[in-house]
Image 1: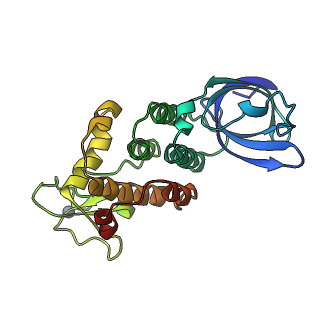
Image 2 (image 1 turned 30 degrees about the vertical axis):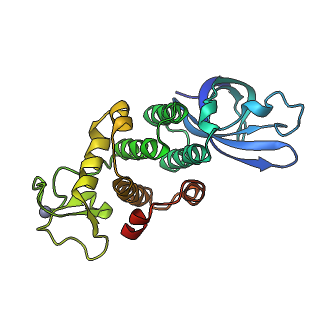
Image 3 (image 1 turned 120 degrees about the vertical axis):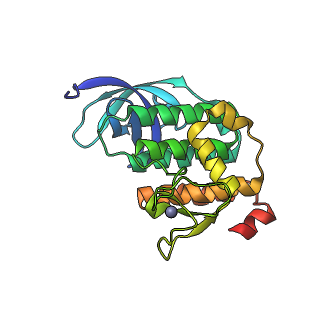
Length: 262
Ligand SMILES: [Zn+2]
């Protein structure tokens, strides 16, 4: 369906950059049109009507009209501001990371309803105070689903044998998941995966967010699964997310046992 000259949509700001004296170009994710670039003219002037409402980490209702290079924002209303999400740097940095992953997963102007809903839910969870690391893992796992690359954590990716609790496992993102102890696998990318790590990966696929938020876990296992999922997503998107460096800088230092395992 062609997009009309003027249209209104729900949107979340994924990224932005300043243009010229007072304009700003925004990358938006919308449910029906997917990712698009829009320009907010004069938005950096103190008198701008759009001003503070074109912020990230909020669900906006945006009126646009089609432009030649970018569609032009004519009106904005904030639907959900998710203000508590910004209270901690770690939660805000995680929100940037999730937005960057959505940005990199989408082509412009392809409907993105599931991904929009996923990002929206993740922001709600951050706003509700769920541990940012758990929100990020839950999001990465479901993003992989949406990209059609659900990690295999039940059977060996090479021989298809059901994984047994008493064997050893390796995490091999280029093969799509876990390799059993009997299969040789590729020479590189043989990160050992503990049984607890494997169980937690399964939990991220199977449990709902309430159950995930309630899990009692050692920080070593959380970090092991963090490393595993980041590696998986990097492989799926073919590069490292830029926002991770900032996220790692602002959050609490790693416990020493987790450092040793890296
Ligand atoms: Zn195998």
